[in-house]
Image (cartoon, rainbow, N blue to C red; front, side):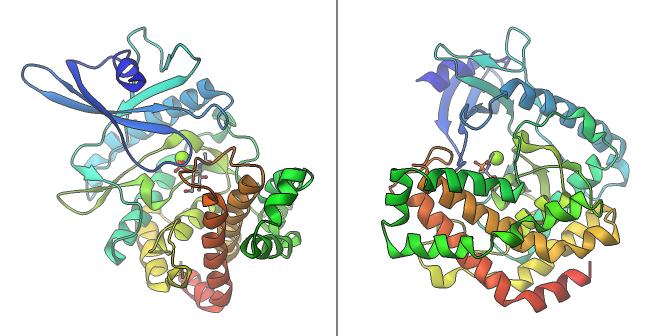
Length: 368
Ligand code: GN1
Ligand code: MG
């Protein structure tokens, strides 16, 4: 198996015992690899980056290097005043000293340490869990708050710039295959209409940024439930993983995405749409955890756009999944036909729930 072969290109002590797929990532391929020596064992995470998505994988690794070095230094400095041992994976170099290894087909592989005695969950398990996910994101923003965003490369141009995803949507609709997919079911037509009705509004954050009201910081880019590790022993959040999208961006993208993910307890691929709702108690819990650890660095202007970001990032993911369905599933990996349409339908349901609960959500956010 290729993963087993590639695992051995990295600088890990011992002999490889196994290399199995792990996680449910929509973009990269991820494996857990176990190495043993005659007296110890080490688990690592091995990943093949999706070259359709990340056109400059070396830049992804360069960013990861800067971010992890910066964060590790701060975590050590602040350890004595912290309420837990925060962690962040470290890059494992290849045996030739590079941060990655290339396979015979040009595939780009990298290895990182596996945070031990901790797990991440695809869906939120409880209000305590939601608070811990918020805490981990808050701590990450705190750690990045003194990092110079201009040092980081833009590894995914247009990421979270919502109006830009309309271009992909329009391009797909301009093809006969895209038209056929649009007309393939009533569900597809409903999602299409829902998206079209929100086209004008979709630039709400970019417009505020253009007016100079809010600005870029260093963000994670993908702080969903599944990317936060929870300590098996203490049940506290301990690390944020998946640093591929860490780059300059609005802090709103992160807060919106974290709430989008955490406040829908049935997850992104739930079959029963009636269960998809934006849970206000979970929202409150995430925000409490976030606030306790982010050191309140947000400006009032940034706070003004919190409701918009929750609605927008949920809408955006609906649009991204739907545009990919129209384009023939070229970005998000699928395991069954129509999965990206269904994922879009779930995010649409969640966005409808957010819109229906606007005043309650705004009240919860005002307490930030
Ligand atoms: C993708 O593959 P994964 O889990 O890292 C996507 C995110 C979406 C997420 C939805 C680079 O994340 O933006 O929010 O799916 N990552 C990229 O589950 O597009
Ligand atoms: Mg990711």
